Length: 279
Ligand code: DHB
Ligand code: FE
Image (cartoon, rainbow, N blue to C red):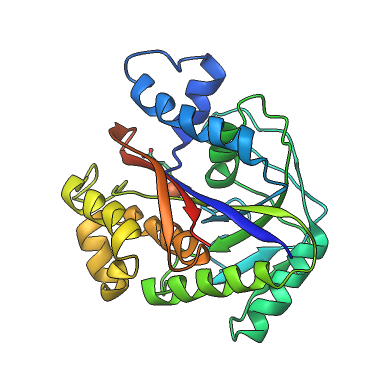
């Protein structure tokens, strides 16, 4: 049976792509952020996942406001990045794990999630940059399954719904008869707001409470509706739903092996957590 060997949750910010391209990892602005990934890379070298299920939100590269699935899963042989207008280099293509993709789609639909299956799908900075932080050589030693959650066009799925999606994903991976070692990577958040009167808003107290909750009381954030999360974490802080789905996929008991929190990276409070399930 396939096994979820760990979960990683991290922020995504296009500026990370520029910093990588310019080799700024040791600059004072970037060092506290990039240094956070050292222990995670060390863990990856030991843990050797075969597949990464990437739970992320697209920002208009693959889905635009005219057609917006709430939950979509990639079922392509390959996923390419493209220019999103941020001026960051595009990253090498990612190989899909199509049989696992279709298994996850079937199981999620069976679990009453109305999934949009995508046999062609471009992946944006929310997918590519966290992958480049985990594998800086950008030679991906893993296959991928993208799981995309709408966080840009109202109505958004609730925290409770994203938790349940993660639980269903965890069950679906466990039901896959292959021997794959699966990593779940959730990208987004933490608190940030890019537009409007509160542009630049960051809420450290809320972010740290949320990170703590994922270890000790993981459904804590499910008590908040979308408006309450936006109030606490900013408009784009709603991306923390990816962390919730990822944590849910890991099962009841987890061990947090590493965490980092650094303010700000661009306009975002950047967070990082590494979990192993306690089987
Ligand atoms: C920023 C953060 C994001 O989550 C994003 O998708 C784009 C930009 C930022 O802080 O600049
Ligand atoms: Fe984002």
